[in-house]
Image 1 (tube, rainbow, N blue to C red):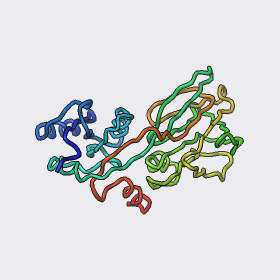
Image 2: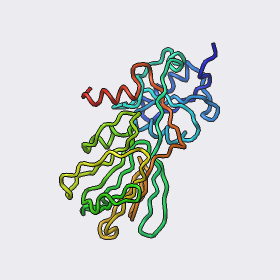
Image 3: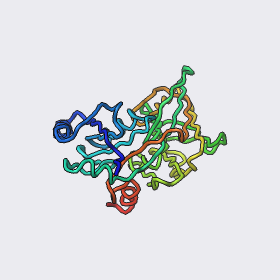
Image 4: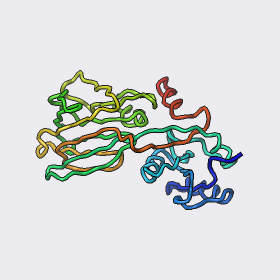
Length: 257
């Protein structure tokens, strides 16, 4: 029977633990350059997984992560044995990134994609003042807060969860719009939006109250407005061991384990 995966490329974070695991796997299994691989095995934590997904975004190459970091929410358990058997038995989780376009106070536009979230954050001691529109219709005339973020289902258990945003099942057709330390309106806790929504956020007083826009780890400072929407033209494929899919992990997170 033909195998799904025959050519594996290894990538690893620079930590000593991840590098040691990399050398162990390379001594046991033949590896190829990423351009020649049909699957990427990533060794590290969730940060390394995000960087790897960004690095190979648009290539269609699936990523199989093994945890050599701390939390490892997106990763599988590290084991040296039976790598190809685990790859063959793995289950696919498919996600789509957010496309962010940000304009700065000089009128220049900047584009980036986010797997977890797009966030807007105050740059100084002063709270940000933001105006929120959905599909060109204003929904919040003024949000005074440390910022606001837009999370994908895959990213809903990351920064979004830490600021009391909702956990979204991976296959839910939703985005979470979550305020960060909202001062006004005090009782606004955010919104659940359909994943086809076009989100526009305008910075009020951008010079006096500067704001940065961040797509995962890509930051643009002194922005005046941001547009964000899901980019369905890009598939992000992650592989997980049976019983440990991203859907299952998100479900477990909702029950506190």
